[in-house]
Image (cartoon, rainbow, N blue to C red; front, top):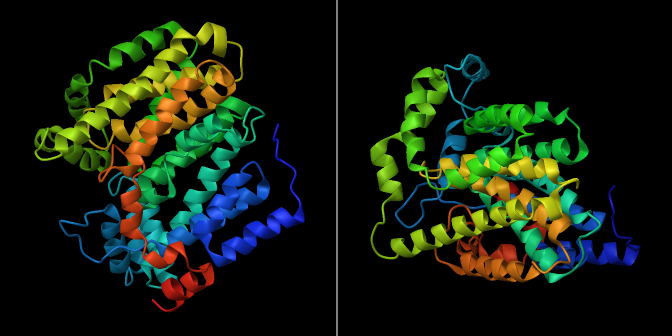
Length: 417
């Protein structure tokens, strides 16, 4: 049951007047009364404004190597692409002989027909990202246990770790929110129609074909809780085996997927990404290890307290799927851009289970430690896995975003650009 807070016209007016003055400032007004419909609509507008204002140079440099540059270049190169070429690429995609996903190509083709302005492209992808992320967040915020308290805001942050900045690499992270939204409907509302939406996620990013396997495992083996608890614990220690296993599987995959995964499974690339490096790289590796251990410790607590806290609640199905997903995450952690990215999908489920099954219990002290870790990660000059980092926001936003009206930003980035 959806439980929104009551709100008056004055409260709504203040929020949207503030938005017209500064979307950045309006974000804090929305958080003050986050359990309201108007706040969610406000967040949607703020995310759109962020997408419109997202700015990257036209060339990668040593100091600016974000994926957004490649997406901008690809978009601007698609201006003269004909519909015939698009249909040929679509046919290849459907027959598994072309690209492993097609969302990126489709966005480029459609938006470039309107305007060859990469800000418009990021605006469009931010709308899709915002819709599914906020539709997912609604499950957490409208839960009766959610209040305007520090533990709940820490859980909100944990749930929303896949933040709007990730339109920088929008294919995977949009697919991630679509998958989370579909799974929340399947696991909490018992609405199995959303399996079709889940199966559509590979259109957005090819790596989500793995969810075909995960769903089958859940449907066929979801009753064996003890088995998955054991596999979860074992998976943390055997991730080195994943590289060899996945490399052997490549020969049996369609050409489109082989081309995509060969680069990521190449041993030299894996060693390059996972090696200790020099300078502050060892510090980054340390923070990554701490983040991974922290997430696994939380899931271990869920396993230990399953019978007393989770069993026979509406979170039991979610708990089972979380074990399956975390087993995959741990097992594939050595594969760059796979295990660490999919760990991000686990965090919304962890946050929801904690809210429903561990809220108002002695475990809140662990949440405060988690909150301190998040603040530390945000302040670092580098990203820990795909966790949020304030410095990256400053790279893609010009100073005017933080004080200007959305009308000015619309004129600057869409009309005048």
